[in-house]
Amino acid sequence: MKFVVIGAGITGLAAAHRAVELARERSVELELTLVEARDRLGGTIATERADGFLVEAGPDSFLSEKPWALALCRRLGVEHRLVRTDDRFRKVFVWRAGRLHALPDGFQLLAPTRLGPFIRSGLFSWPGKLRMALDLVKPRGTSDDESLGAFVRRRLGREALERVAQPLVAGIYTADPDELSLTATMPRFSELERRERSIILALWRANRRAPQAGTSGARWSLFVTFQNGMQEIVTALASRLPPGSVLLKHRVDGIERDGRGWRVAGGLGTALEADHVVVAAESYTASRIMRYVDPALATLLGEIPYASSATVSVGVRRADVPHPLEGFGFVVPRTERRAVFACTFSSVKYPGRAPEGHVLLRCFVGGALNERVLESDDRALIDTARDELRDALGITAEPVLTRVARWTKAMPQYHVGHGGRVETIERCVAALPGLHLAGGAYRGVGIADCVRSGEAAAERVFGVAPTSHDADRA
Ligand SMILES: Cc1cc2nc3c(=O)[nH]c(=O)nc-3n(C[C@H](O)[C@H](O)[C@H](O)COP(=O)(O)OP(=O)(O)OC[C@H]3O[C@@H](n4cnc5c(N)ncnc54)[C@H](O)[C@@H]3O)c2cc1C
Image (cartoon, rainbow, N blue to C red; front, side, top):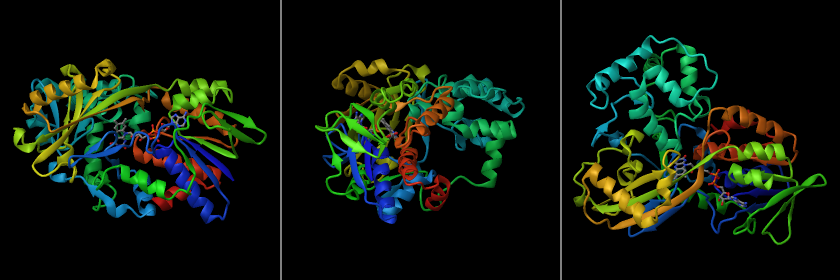
């Protein structure tokens, strides 16, 4: 079987690796080619070691609650390389009115689940707290797919949106909550409202049934990473692919029908022939390379918006940081009009990220709400991050390390209507035998979702029923 995968981010690597596994299990002769435009594997995953620091340019961890990435680590034999977050410092701060406020204990993304810490918190005003409590008596909404912003405003009020939901969501999706589809990004909350009406009561009851500890068992925290950074999963996957199957620095320009199979062309010298093609590049790239295959499908793919952002990593001496840094980091509401929208205390969250006596802080700038800041050059972005770290944490000393990583159009935005669009896209693709789409643009933006999406594409090729296999991997 001639099998071509376009794009060697985590999705494409997972698809290629799963095809190798299934071909071996079923004694199918597999001729695999993984085509990547860049000169390296991993896509948005990129880890650098410099002066004793371990700097993640892109993702720094994955969610262990969604089983697919963890299950892949087990099959790759790298589970022992995983490290968990230091949960003594699980706290997250919110930057508001000139200082950092701890998010009250028990606050679950959108709503409080513990009364005492919520009442004592200085993050919300009294009218704001009372408005949140109105969730207890408010009736259900009627909309099929509303924005996350509209949902939080309706149930919990403007303050809950502005001071918590917006900055936390920006930290995850680099997105505008007034555009984001609730059902495509956080279906759990619309489900809770549908089932139990009040979000606060529903979360409170759920907590009483299953105390929060990460649902993957005591062994792993909610987020996990590798001792030597996220690049480890890329290296492990690459080592399982057949020699000579990876083509780097080859940008695919187009795909066309070729008898019962496909031809993959562009920057490849001669075109590749394939029985099956998995397109695991960004959806706007998928749109371009599939424009002659199905123009209507290409239009739908091109309509999925993406946001750009940058990470600015700053290494400093511990003695130069007046703040105790007892937390995983802070988020910044848009109403504060700052350039940094989130900051991770990387060396507090995970071990081995900074040399003895130093800390590593990673700031995020840009995102859907402030892409213009990315017009600045790297020097200016570093200066901006340093200004804001001075205001938030009191750091005035020269850093010992700085790194800027820019991610242009790297984060898909699931706007209202996304679910319907993806269903139509999937129907169109199902009518094109041998062609498959995978990646963060469709049904989940995180690493775990991307692993599932890539593996599911390979499984469709081999006729594996997704549910049965998902169950044994979980
Ligand atoms: C700054 C940042 C931080 C993040 N943090 C986290 C996190 O902590 N945890 C988490 O779970 N997720 C995180 N994410 C999201 C996660 O990193 C991505 O969703 C995931 O890595 C996407 O993987 P992918 O393979 O689908 O896409 P990509 O990684 O974008 O890979 C697509 C690949 O396709 C290649 N390509 C494009 N066009 C062509 C072409 N024409 N021909 C050949 N190849 C092509 C690209 O070069 C690229 O290598 C973060 C994202 C960003 C940007």
